[in-house]
Length: 84
Image (cartoon, rainbow, N blue to C red):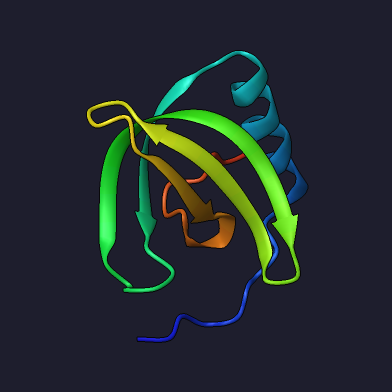
Protein backbone atom coordinates (compact mmCIF):
# COMPACT_ATOMS: atom_id res chain seq x y z
CA UNK A 1 0.00 0.00 0.00
CA UNK A 2 1.54 3.29 -1.10
CA UNK A 3 1.66 6.20 1.32
CA UNK A 4 0.92 9.73 0.15
CA UNK A 5 3.63 12.24 -0.77
CA UNK A 6 5.67 13.84 2.00
CA UNK A 7 4.12 16.90 3.67
CA UNK A 8 6.69 19.17 5.35
CA UNK A 9 6.26 19.51 9.11
CA UNK A 10 6.24 22.91 10.88
CA UNK A 11 9.55 24.34 12.10
CA UNK A 12 8.51 24.15 15.77
CA UNK A 13 8.19 20.38 15.42
CA UNK A 14 11.72 20.05 14.05
CA UNK A 15 13.04 22.23 16.89
CA UNK A 16 11.20 20.20 19.53
CA UNK A 17 12.52 16.92 18.13
CA UNK A 18 16.08 18.27 17.92
CA UNK A 19 15.90 19.33 21.58
CA UNK A 20 14.55 15.89 22.52
CA UNK A 21 17.46 14.23 20.69
CA UNK A 22 20.04 16.44 22.42
CA UNK A 23 18.44 15.73 25.84
CA UNK A 24 18.19 11.99 25.11
CA UNK A 25 14.44 12.07 25.74
CA UNK A 26 12.13 9.14 25.47
CA UNK A 27 8.69 9.64 23.94
CA UNK A 28 5.54 7.66 23.37
CA UNK A 29 5.13 8.04 19.61
CA UNK A 30 2.17 7.08 17.45
CA UNK A 31 3.06 6.78 13.77
CA UNK A 32 2.04 5.17 10.51
CA UNK A 33 4.54 2.88 8.81
CA UNK A 34 5.50 4.28 5.42
CA UNK A 35 5.59 0.90 3.67
CA UNK A 36 2.62 -0.92 5.19
CA UNK A 37 0.35 1.93 6.43
CA UNK A 38 0.07 0.09 9.77
CA UNK A 39 -0.11 2.26 12.89
CA UNK A 40 2.21 1.83 15.86
CA UNK A 41 2.38 3.24 19.37
CA UNK A 42 5.72 2.65 21.09
CA UNK A 43 7.98 4.25 23.67
CA UNK A 44 11.13 5.26 21.79
CA UNK A 45 14.48 6.93 22.38
CA UNK A 46 14.99 9.68 19.78
CA UNK A 47 18.35 9.31 18.04
CA UNK A 48 18.73 11.48 14.94
CA UNK A 49 16.94 13.55 12.29
CA UNK A 50 17.85 12.79 8.68
CA UNK A 51 16.74 14.18 5.32
CA UNK A 52 16.45 12.63 1.89
CA UNK A 53 14.68 13.40 -1.36
CA UNK A 54 11.68 11.49 0.04
CA UNK A 55 11.40 13.75 3.10
CA UNK A 56 12.61 14.11 6.67
CA UNK A 57 12.97 11.12 8.97
CA UNK A 58 13.43 10.42 12.65
CA UNK A 59 15.68 7.57 13.68
CA UNK A 60 14.48 6.14 16.97
CA UNK A 61 15.15 3.07 19.13
CA UNK A 62 12.17 1.12 20.45
CA UNK A 63 12.86 0.73 24.18
CA UNK A 64 11.13 -2.64 24.57
CA UNK A 65 13.06 -4.39 21.78
CA UNK A 66 16.11 -2.24 20.98
CA UNK A 67 15.07 -2.13 17.31
CA UNK A 68 16.12 1.06 15.48
CA UNK A 69 13.42 2.53 13.25
CA UNK A 70 13.33 5.17 10.54
CA UNK A 71 10.04 7.05 10.83
CA UNK A 72 8.90 9.61 8.27
CA UNK A 73 8.16 12.81 10.24
CA UNK A 74 4.85 13.65 8.58
CA UNK A 75 3.52 10.19 9.49
CA UNK A 76 3.90 10.79 13.23
CA UNK A 77 0.37 11.30 14.58
CA UNK A 78 1.16 12.92 17.93
CA UNK A 79 3.64 15.65 16.98
CA UNK A 80 4.15 18.39 19.58
CA UNK A 81 1.95 21.48 19.25
CA UNK A 82 3.16 25.03 19.92
CA UNK A 83 2.30 26.59 23.28
CA UNK A 84 1.00 30.16 23.42
